Length: 216
Image (cartoon, rainbow, N blue to C red; front, top):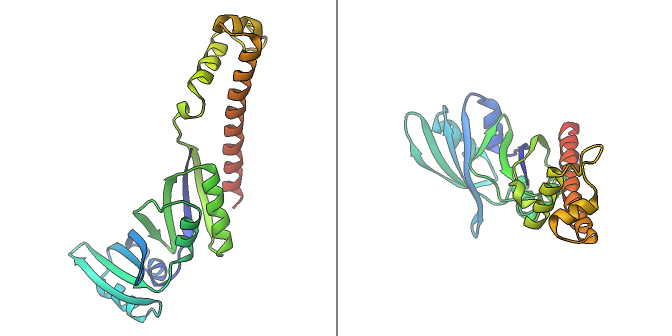
């Protein structure tokens, strides 16, 4: 599965604070919907708590807020909004739970997570649907290679590599490979074909994701 680094445009008073105070650190520890509204817990460093609460006080979307902790270095503040932010809706609808803590910087939420190609595509579609801007920063494969092929497929591909089946010119024929694996030619051909299809599909999906990330 791909490991994705991306940033999503944030909204609301916290996003504006992060733009106004670029040296401060904002970490969104959790953000969940409750019966009373949508609750967010944020840890803020290098910014006076009073500056944050003043902004929350003036935000018409904030129902309540509470300073849970404060010391010389940081403050932890919980606040309740009447609705869930668009990015949160997109994550929930696409089956991508946010990888907390999230870093908020200069109006953008930065996140790194491991997901499937289908879920990443669904997340992007949902972000587009709710009008939230985003940017894919990098996509790398983080899957365990053993998850891509079945044990039998890995055995056949390994044997094919060992016998030079994929060399040019080939070091062995399909018949030779089938004999080495103690199966008939049709069985060897079918298993190799499915394994090759899985490998090629994974490669092309990753290449497509990389192209998409550079085009946004």
